[in-house]
Image 1: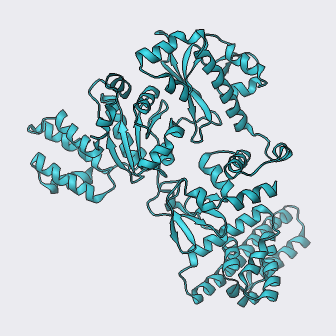
Image 2: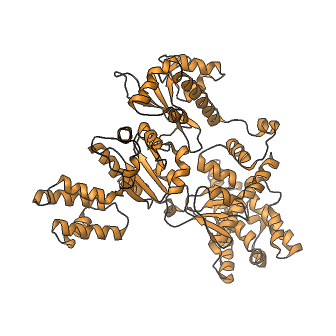
Length: 589
């Protein structure tokens, strides 16, 4: 298996894989970009081609090509191996597959969803699906090509047909329940029945195109709810998934723009009409996790929700969330009473014209206030001022804020000073959802002294060697002790040869080796601009800190033993411990 991993790494430079998700800029030997795992405005995601790792020192996510793919696509190691082996043309022998990359829980659930999708597809193209296909073609305007491309299906009007099909395919009841495709009649979990019955099925895929859940539309007027979504499962989290993203991702990346619509049919009709940089939310509001998913691909987000009050509220809340991501936010407005699906059906080929007329969301919101309230009345002015100040408090750009305040002052015939006074009074509450998603880079965890010393040994061996007399092997944990002993041995024989220093890592276990490379990258970034004397000073301070930590740990252990000795009235042991504590107290660091 190690041969397979090594071969994949040799064929796929990590910077090439990461560049598929984020834009990178070369800074010296490394590359930098905005982290794909959290919201930030200053790049903290570093890719080191030499070390073969990509890591964010803000949210502490990343690693080698396998760790990166597992994090960014939310997959398990076995799936990462398979995907990258396929990508690089590396063949995995059958025995390797069985021994090393046995399918995990998530992959089994994905297999179940793929199997049941085929089942639903067969149902819709059978005699049972004639009326449903007629509804899609004639009433909704979908073509057979789109129906097949997005694998729409039909859940039969039965309590058992779906799960019986899956049982015959070899899946267990517990797995079908876990996949959210069935529900239990009692606590024994043996008596189960199908969750989706007589519903038009929209398969929902993850960013890799794997089916992970469903949205089921009712086919009878008395069916409730109208849309039934898969429950939360190990692979389905609706606040993290965007319908159609796998199919639209390449188009979104080209345009650097994503158009967000509300429903499955809105998405399908827009895609069918040639607007392919489109995605839909899955029966939920737009969330921070959705925006994180889009962040590596877009500069511009276009909202297209219904123009009723609920749609406008959804648009406003979505805009608030986007302020943490520095997107340009625009809005696609539709004729009143129409959604995307209705508009496309009645105006084939015309959606592009509307897309060409999109406007900045803040401009739309501003104009809408003046349509809703009478600016010439005192009450109307008060309402406009009240609502727009609450809105403008969420805008991050001070330049943008100033522009709107100047415009508002002119249109309402009030002074800018008065508006600024009102803004101070109505600051956004810290409890507001837009405030809850803080930039993780403000919460950077500090590595401990021992971790940083590993990086310093690998990056600045000469400085560490010069003060080796200040360091005792006993100061280190077993992991660092191993690295330090090897460092001294290799340095004695090879001097300042960097290749020889890297040989320290050659036969370490994979976990320790990866950690050492990570700390080497951290030190490389943190200390690259420091002069020699400050680096040496830092090394000395870290050694002192490490020694202090070890002494304090030893003291806590002795105090624990002292308490036990006093409880047992063991005078000899008490005396021994007190002598040891006194000795520690006089230790010079």
